[in-house]
Length: 328
Image 1 (tube, rainbow, N blue to C red):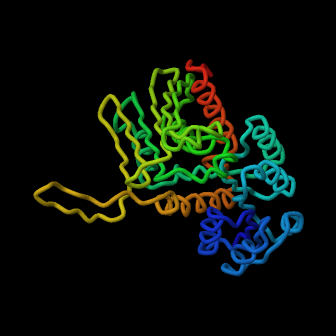
Image 2: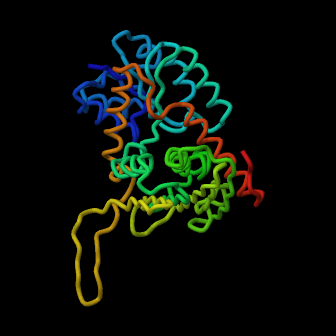
Image 3: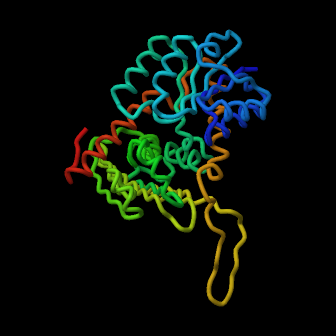
């Protein structure tokens, strides 16, 4: 049984805490949050205690640390947990600044603790099956990859101001998926972006609509499209075209109910947002983190993946501003 200290009692923290509490090999021991009321409510819900960072990390009974607090706390908490020799699961990103992210990764690497990053989409059953069939050569040589990711609506402006921008906040997941599915690193990035959904987002220097094209050394192309608005629900699709065929992972719908009538055929909408759509992925990534601790093997997705996704995000941002391709 692995005792967890969790930093963060917000929306994603509540998901992680619930999964820890339900896991047969884990228990939530301590919750740390800058909001005492939020920490107390989450701790009481799962039979945990409220604590502070120093005491929790010094506790010999704490066997792992889960970081789901605000982004600006991630790097320092990873370093503190690493120095306390605790395995760490950290929500993305390690930091909004690539150099700071690399510095915290260096600390974790030097100490030698397992560090897993929360790129949960790798653990989605549909996407992981697509990945396996790509590696099994079912469609031959991959030639074109298309990743679609659209939110049902834009986040609050206060969130946008602190998010680091669409490329570092939203598309960062898709950059990781692209690297994972392509099986090789992109060498060129071309991006175009606009503020079409909410002019206020453009007013604070961000974008809400973007198209990015990645190219690998082998010539394989990947196109990623993001939008902060999809009126029909959370749009999450992947299509892979190869020399022998195509693989496609479609949206997960609210139900399999389908109406057929004179006017046409109507299906249910996609699940509304990421908490519902990736519920299974959040459970599976916790399973993997615990397995990595027990087996003493590196997690499938670690700090290096976080840094490399940030490299792509920074290149996309530069390309969107200059209108020119960025070579990596």
